[in-house]
Image (cartoon, rainbow, N blue to C red; front, side, top):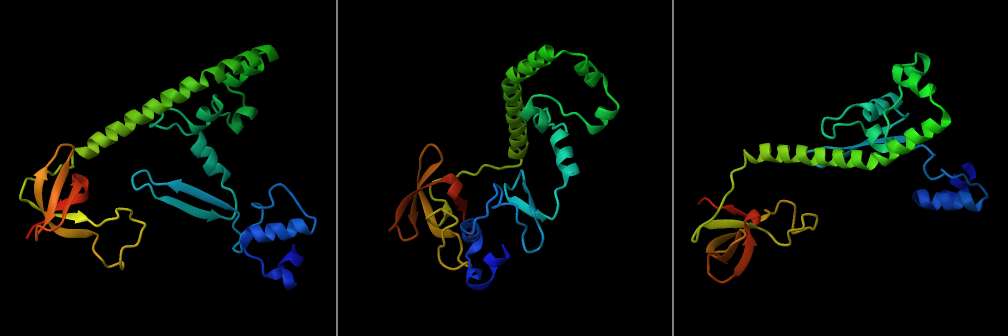
Length: 224
């Protein structure tokens, strides 16, 4: 690997090129693309998504935090009414302490024969789909309650013929650049000419030259 980093081989381009060069020299292992650490010594990434903003956050870690992962996977979730471990494997997780001081559940398992263990395991696998479906229903009910609580604070706005409004500039794709970064995302001034069903409005500009159709969610009231 040191030879692949030095001399004429030093001008590699990122990971895929280095991966190709090392394999060409006769070295290979299954996890060679993910095993090497970064220049800062980080090997793992802890990723999470904020529930409200939907933004993904990632933190680099030098070593795996097994205790944190174990706590997350075995913690009872109010949203799904279950643990993440049980939704994946169909059974509850066995704590390391239970292997030293057997609990009632472990004692019952040890007293079963191989055939009984296989039968119970198959029954748990058959019930896993139903358990996941129930967790999905619990999640949807929780999201509905959150949405209902949030919508109580939302004041739906509507416009009448003759109202002055501003409209979001087209294209509505926010990742596409439209001028410089200080340009306003609102375009106008427009006048509501006609109101349609399904929150659609026909707009004309102040000179009565441009006519366009816009949905209510892309409009806001203009206050002179």
